[in-house]
Image 1 (cartoon, rainbow, N blue to C red):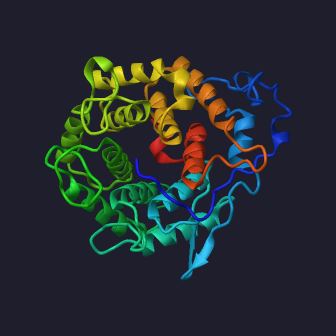
Image 2: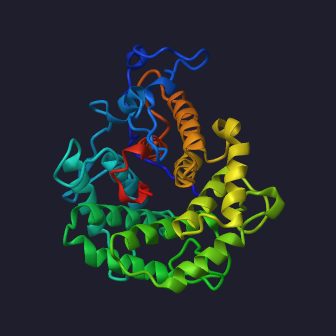
Length: 348
């Protein structure tokens, strides 16, 4: 994973008193969640625990962005972080022009559209980070907005963005940091392209069947066999973050019952108690929350959701509610807000 520097921290302004109505856990001070979760037959929490709702929706939860060249943006010149912030603002129902963060979402989408290049790449010219991370997140974001609103100026940009992903697929079926075909399979870059393609496909944009088939082969080539998890650039050194990414990408390609998917889920379950210490913690939480949800096991999903929400909320600053920086807080909000299912990509 690449490291990103951010100018402005996206905040969760969660007061310590927000937990006062919940019975505190012995070690973390985070409220007990189990008694707030009622379960429907499909395994979804019917109601998100109030303590989690407060973390996601508390007034003033996001710092305002800044104006630059007439565009509203969020403390970064990278389209990837801006896209994550937009998605986090949309997690409980805001869309451009509507909802508590309608204005912010609209201006963020405007920023993405203005950074769409003729080649299809959605990447700021000022950005210093590898373009395919940013491009995939921007494509995902625009696909979600298009699917929810049908905003007409998004569709041509989205189609060009999808075409660029398809053209950039490497000979082994994976993707690398740059928008050109290259050998090898970087699972962190590849999963982002796959999720973006799935979101676009869900929104009605054509994605070639061969692209998905080759991507499945690429992802499976990084599975570590008896070790159950997935490696970063090949079938070695499995870890929770890359395993969660690998499992979700296979699920997004319809491989729910594949051996690699099943073993990857087992790997994550075996590492559940250690999730708060894994490398790339928030990235891992974002993908693991989704793939456990997509596994369609009610008991396991609800246990995972409760435990990992508690873990993430325990990391909030007692002074200002921050959960790390811009990227980290957006990942956390998207993970904890998954049961809202307003974002199409979160639906089964």
